[in-house]
Length: 207
Ligand code: GRF
Image (cartoon, rainbow, N blue to C red; front, side, top):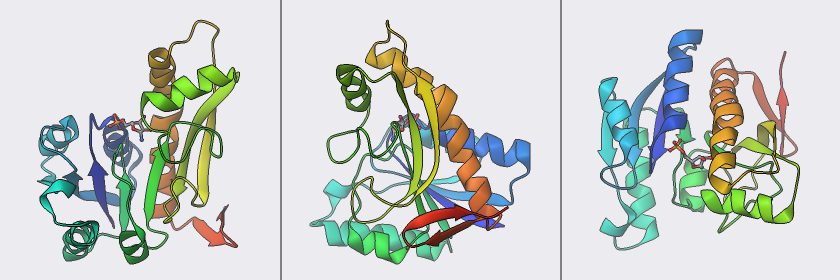
């Protein structure tokens, strides 16, 4: 049984999609702890409803990034967490944390990487940028996390058509429904079944 730790900052719909998929698809995994970067994140309530342990570990309560990341590392190591999911987590993690869980951290990004990604591309900004560029297709990407923001090995991507009358808000909603909530649980399933291999910085999917 794969032990998963989640890092969240907001509504937690991706976390919910993963919890639901674990149940409905019988994925051999369990979310054992959900850590929020701030108080009041609705994701914490979603976890509590499932009797999953919750915690708030906020960066601003530490003197520096190193102490903050060490606290996160200890939290997950103490619980023998084997996979960390960044499910709408709004903090960029440094090398210390990433190295402690090498190839064991997954993030969901609401665009087709390498488009509209990197520092500053979060939340609605991503969809604003896609609409501004006039692209006709966007989507979502699940990738392993490395120290370079949004640049780790890509696990899964799913495209979503852009409509002429889309606003950042309508596009964000469609990308979540059609892409994020589909590919994030799927990536977790593949990881739990040991079907993801990283070679030369790329993910290969075993049959
Ligand atoms: C999603 O759009 C995700 O791609 C981004 O943050 C948002 C989180 O939503 N990283 P939720 O908290 O999972 O509802």
